[in-house]
Length: 585
Image 1 (cartoon, one colour):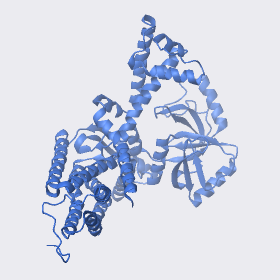
Image 2 (spheres, helix red, strand yellow):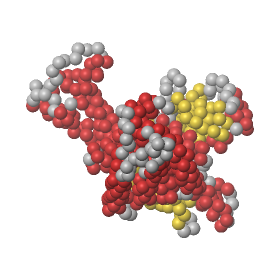
Image 3 (tube, helix red, strand yellow):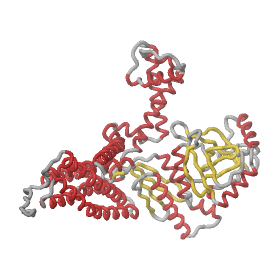
C-alpha cells in the first residue's frame, strides 16, 4: 500500500470517526440539562410540550401584531420567517426583502395555519433531540440509572387458553420461556447490558439502562406479536356506521363492542383502526368490522423482513409463509377475491386492502412507520410470549454509583493515558511522540465506534477503555524494539524502519488476535457487565492494531523516505559504527 493511499485511508477514518462522535459530543457538551430531559420524554409528552410552546408563540405573535406590527420579528420567532419563505416559494408568490411582524402574519391565512407551522417547528426540534439521544453513547444503570420494571405472568389466563390446570413444572417452563423471549427481544431492541432476572417463583425483573422510550419498551414487554389476517364484513361495517351516526354519544359498550347486540351478526367483531400521527403515537381513525374467525394466523409466518415500496417509498413488511401457511392463504385469498382483508396486530387494525388475486407464499403489507415495521418484524422473529404478562410496577431508578464513579473512571483514563504518553516520550524520544499520536487516535477511534453503535457505557466498560489505553502501546513497543535492533546493526533509518515493521508484524498480529478471540468469546458467552467489557476490549484491540501498523508506519515512512531523515530519534544510545569488514563495533 502506497503512502498516499494510507494517508487517504487514515484521513477517511478520521473524518468518519468525527461524524460518528459528533452526536455524543453534542449530547454531553452542547445540550443543556433541560434539553436532555426533553429528549428523554415520551412521544405523548413531546406532543403536549410542542403544542404548549406553539400556543405560547401564537399568543405572543398576536400581541405583537396588535401593538407593534412594524417591529422586526423576534429572534426566537425567526423560524416563522423560514416557514413563511417556504410557503411563498411553494405558492410561487413574491418573497419580500424585509420581514416584520405584520408581513409574517399576512403570509398565513389564519391563526390555525400559523399554529400548525409553529407546532411543526417545535415537533421537529424535540424529535431531533430524541433522535440525537438515540445516536449517542448512553450511560448504564450503575452510572446514570434507568428503568425498573416488575412483571408477573398471568398464569390463570394461560390455564384458560390450554383448558387445563397447569402443574408446577409447566408454570416454571412457561416462566423460563418468557425470560428467554424477553432476553431476545430486549437485546435486539438495542438496549445494551439489560438485566433480566427471575424474582421469587413467578415474577420477572427487568432493569434497562439509560432512558429508553417507555411506550416502545412497554409494547416490547407486553406485545404478543399477534399478526393475523381477517376478512372485513362490509355489510356489517355499513350497519355499524349507520348505528354510529344514530347514536353519536355512546355507541360502544364497556367491552369495546356496539351496545346494541343486533348491530353485528354472529361471528363478527368490531376492531379499531389505528394509524401513527406525526409524533409516532397511535391515533384511532375509525372502526372496522371483521370476521372473528382468523383467516391466517401469524404463527404460519416463517420469516419477516422490512423493505420499502418502490413507488411510495413507505416501509413495508414482507412475510414468507410456511408450506402449510401458503396453502391456507392461497385458499383464503382465492375464495375472497374482491373482498377486503384487514391486517390486525394485537387486536388493532393496522392496514386493509382489497384482494385482487390469489396469494400463496409471500405477503407484503404496509401501513406501518419504519420503527413500527422494524419492531413488528423483530417481535415475530423472536417468537410470541408463551404466557401473557402483566406489568406490576414501572419506575425510574437512580444510578447505583453515580457521578463519583464517572469522575473516578474518567480521571483514571486521563491519568493512565498521561503516564503512558510521558513514558513513551521519555523512553523512545521522537519515536515516542509517534506512539503518543497513535495512542490518541486509538482512543478517538474507540470512542467513535462505541458512539455509532449507541453503546451503553458502564463501569466495567470504562475498565475496558483503561485496559485498552494500557495495551495500545504494546504493539508500538514491539515494533520500536525491532527497529532499534536493526538500527544498531548499522542499517540506514529507512531500512531499519522497513525491517522493524516487517519482522514485528506477525508478533503484533499473534498477540492481538489471541486477545481479540478471547474478547469475542466473552462478548458471545457473557452477559451484562462482562459483555460490555468484552465489546470495549475487542473494539480497542482492532483500533490499536490499525494505529500501530498503519498510522505509525506512515509517519515513519514520511520522515525516512519523503524527508530523507538519516538518523532516527528512537534510542538514548549512540548509533553503532561499522568496522572495516562491515561488522558493528
